[in-house]
Length: 323
Length: 122
Figure 1 (tube, rainbow over the protein chains, first blue to last red):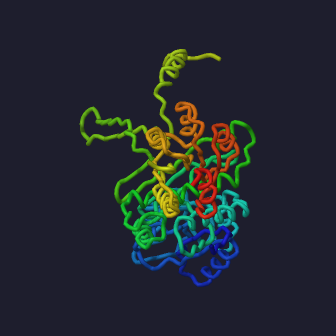
Figure 2 (spheres, rainbow over the protein chains, first blue to last red):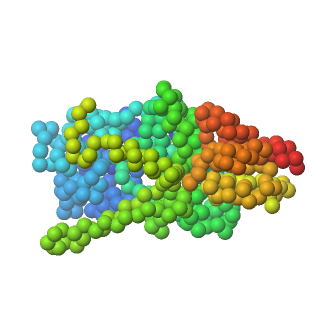
Figure 3 (cartoon, each protein chain N blue to C red):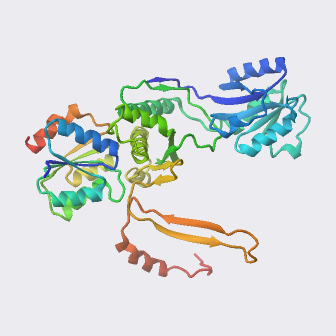
């Protein structure tokens, strides 16, 4: 596997002034940023797809078509509210509170220290040890190679994003827990490209097994291998309770947006409830809420009575319990 | 009637392991999770070896082993775990339940086929 390990972040830059642009380019090189020059188009397509963006820098003098910098930034903020936007002003003369909802920070070309502070606040907030990054890449590369045969695997530099966008139709999700981290690992891809690999016999699946359920199972297996490898390589449990976490089973949840498909790995029926919420005057359309319980990892209803008798010993609803 | 039962919720792994063992002249049956594996094992007395994943829905691999040893009282069938887990507590639990061997995924058939054949006397 070919890989790069320095963490970077991509920043889209709206800048019309040559000198400022050159200063920003140098700043990006010095601060692990990949600066992308925004095209002079009012289209916001780049923001509606997953573009790996960490943030946006926009000069207050920017004019794209009829749109001013504030109008462009407002539009970006509407599409991608999680994306931090930094406004380059000619002079930083106090904040414009009316724009605080849109802009995460302000700076001037002779006050790049303010931009650096912004980036540290919004992007480079968490420290990721280099050995951990290398280990994650290595384990992941092995997991991919084990399932996608005869392929070259390239890994770009790891990057940080403020991103809530889903890439591709396929996604798997698995909890990651240790004494020093808790969260999820997510793997996203496109269905068509994965199907092509199956058809060419480059996966452990039969070449005609190209249904979306099979494709999702392939993604799940890669996820599972990555999860197991990372969990084994970086455990460091400090006490028994934490150590017990490592002994709990987990399986990936897989999602295919295109087919409106989600799998918890189990074919057992799900316990569902449907709530319809309607305002009393019936002025608005009702809201449907679908609730599903998926006990895919364990379900022992025989123990239900035990938990019920324990609950009855507790204080009734609404009562104050003194300790 | 099969000699080996492969239990894994991943179709990719099931297919890979099953195909490999069949290509080595072994009779193989597969199951999609621990619950399915337990039921299939109960129905087929010819099974001499179970190769099972751990992290599976409905019933995980180690609980399946415990049920086979406890509920069915079977202490003779050979069981190997094929898993991404290398956690010491998991291994301890497996050992205590009578798991014979442990393979950390990915499955490298050539490296283990000899031992598998020995275990089932093939």
